[in-house]
Amino acid sequence: MVVVPKSNGDVRICIDFTKLNESVKRENYPLPAVEESLAKLANARMFTKLDANSSFWQTNLAEESRPLTTFITPFGRYCCNRLPFGINSASEFFQKRMSETVEGYQGVLCHMDDVLVFGSSQEEHDERLEKILEAIGKAGLTLNEKWNFQNRQSNSWVKSLTRRVVG
View (cartoon, one colour):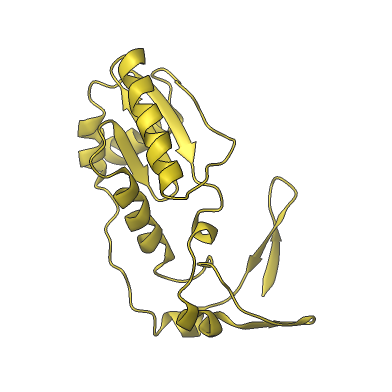
């Protein structure tokens, strides 16, 4: 176990799940293709970037999986009740959960815990954002306070996505 300080003053507890990961059955759920994402953004002018709060920790571990995550500290033995960082299938599992949450909605892209809502106009963007926020709430997911609302054309998430494709 390693305790790593976070930029906000909190700490992140990191556990080495190497041995457990050798036996974990992978979800093998693909991340969205960058080219597909860029094509969807072609006419977008308004953007809001949302970020899931402590993404993996929002997912309960199955009761039978919890003892497998047991770790020892100077204060005793503990196991995870929620999906911990370090399990090799965690990102795939969370991507699937987020994709299923926004499935069927227009103007939204998910990349694990990042959600980009977009529209070609303010009105279209706002309607889509309202629907996505409702869907995320119904799924029992919470978002960080660091939302980036309606960042016209200068959205860093879109720029980084473009750089990965264009080079």
